[in-house]
Length: 206
Image (cartoon, rainbow, N blue to C red):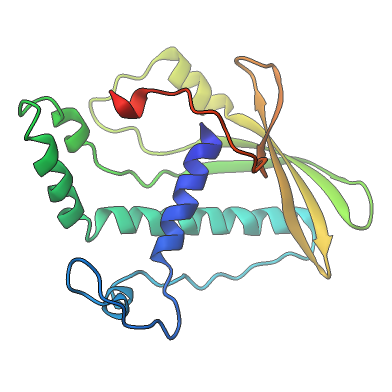
């Protein structure tokens, strides 16, 4: 599920990227692609340090946070027209309160605490970095906090990153997550195999 959400975020941000010298191609709402690109958020100016595995991982997280912020801004600004289109279709077949909980949900820009716990430089071009990541997002007023929530926010989750040297820069090559609930083992999140997947989920069709 984490990897699915990640790919969804990447796809959304890709759709927000301004293409230089974009041709003026007409669209269904009457605006050209050039006109639309002017309203899109610009990529932030980031200072990245990839001179060592730990610094490269911190730079990677800096990009992750920047992407999350872009997605948050994109989904909270200028999405009303699309939302009204969706609502209009849903209201033709369901009572008013049916989708109320979903519609009242507002996007949240989540924050994280990240601690590097171990750096193992295996060779001149390969390193493995372990980290613990905790969700530090402000708990909304009225939320019911369970014992699991408290424990998860306190303990965080364990991740393992494999970094490889590309020229004079360390780059993230793999990301693993320790599944403490089911597999009790490391599960590779990225990169994923690109072979076709068998669809079994039904939640989008209910």
